[in-house]
Length: 55
Image (cartoon, rainbow, N blue to C red; front, side, top):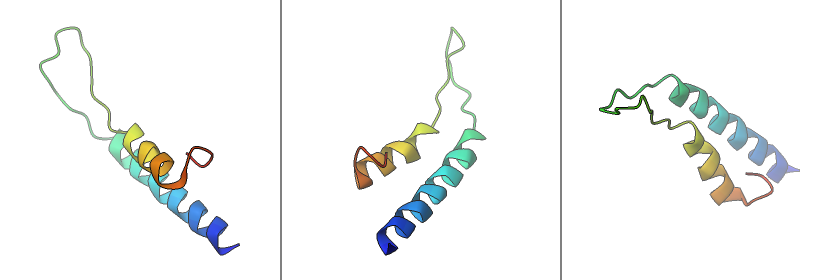
């Protein structure tokens, strides 16, 4: 039971971090209007830490 709670809390923190990273914009020298987004980084970290099912 404690493990499920820990996973839920960690997931909530990663979602909050993803929302914060979503607000950051990188202005780069992209010719065709491309962009870089760090939103997926917390999700990848969660998947690596807890496995494929949680990620």
